[in-house]
Image (cartoon, rainbow, N blue to C red; front, side):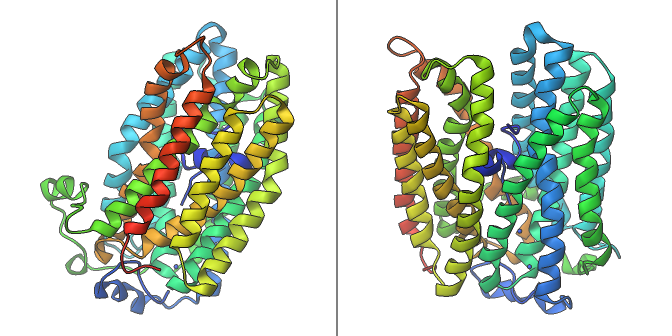
Length: 444
C-alpha cells in the first residue's frame, strides 16, 4: 500500500494514490482565468500526451515510496517497525500541510526562461532520489525516518508542480477526461509499484530508488517538450511572505464556492483515509485472517478493483466533459463511497468485503476525477493557480493526520476493534460532503 501522506493514498482501490492535472483557459471562476492561456502555443492533444506519460512515473513514485519504506523498516527495525513507520508518516503529514501550499505558491512566482513549473519538478525529483538512496543504504532508523521525510516532501513538491500543468494548460472541456486518464495511470501504477517493491525487496537501494528514477524518466518528455510559458516578474504575483502566509487561508466569505468544494473533498478524504488505513487490520481482526493471508487478500483487492477504477476514471471524466456537468457526478460519487463504507462495516466474509471495496472503487474514481475539475472551475485567482490547487490538495492530506489520531479511541469502544463504528462515522461524513457540493454556485 502507498504512504497515506502522498497523492497515492487516495488512489487505493485501484492504486493507493492522489492524487492531481492543460490550453485555452485557466481554471478560475473569474474573467482573469483567460489571461495566461493565450500564451500557450502547444496543442491540447500534445500536452495531454506529455502529461499522461509523466503521470505513470509520478504515480509509481508516490504509490511505492511508502510501501518500500515499510519493507525497509521491517528489515532494519523489525521490533519497532510500526512505531517507526507511524512516526515517519506523521512528521511527513505535518510538514506537507505547510510545504504543499508553499511550494505551489512559490512555483506560481517563479520567473525565468525555464518557466514556472519545470524548475520545481526537477528541484523536487533530484533530492527525492538522493534521499531514497540514503534510505536504501543506511541501516539506521532515525536516519531512514529523516531521509524519508525529505524524500516525500521533495517528491510531493515535484508532483504538485507537475499537477498544475494540465490545470492551467488545457481548456475546461478537456480537463475532466485528462484527470480520469491520470487516475487510470494511478491505477496501473499501483499494480506496477506493488510488483516493483516485491521484486526488489532484497535489493533495498534499488527498491527505494527505482520508483523515483521512473518518475524522472517518464517526466523527461514533459520537461523537454512542454512549452511552460516563461513569465516576467512583472506578470507574476508579488512575493510577499507575510501576505503569502495569510493567503493560504482562503476567505470563505470572498470565495464561498472554493470553500464548499474544499469542505466536500475534506469529508470525502476522511472516508478514504478511514478505509485505506484500516482495511488490512479489519481483514485480520474482523474477518480473522492470518497476517500472510490478509496481505495476499489486500493485493487481490487491488487487482480486482483496478479494471473498475480505470473504467470509472475514464468514463466519468469523459461524460462529465461531454454533458458539461460536475456536481451530479461528485454527489453520486460521495454517496457511493458512503454506501461502500456501510457495506464494509457490516461485512462478515471476504466476499462481502470485496463487494464493498468495488463499490468504493467506483465512487472514489468518479470523485477524484470530477471533483478536481469542479475545483478548477472555482479557484479564487488565476495568478495563484499552483498555490490554490495546493491548498485544495490539503483537503486530502489533513485527514491523514486527523483520522489516525481519532481512530484508536473509536476502535476501542465496546469490545475493541470497532471498525464498524469507525466506518459508519466516516460514511456519515462522506454523505454530508455530498450535501455541501450543492451549495456551490455557478457550476452545474
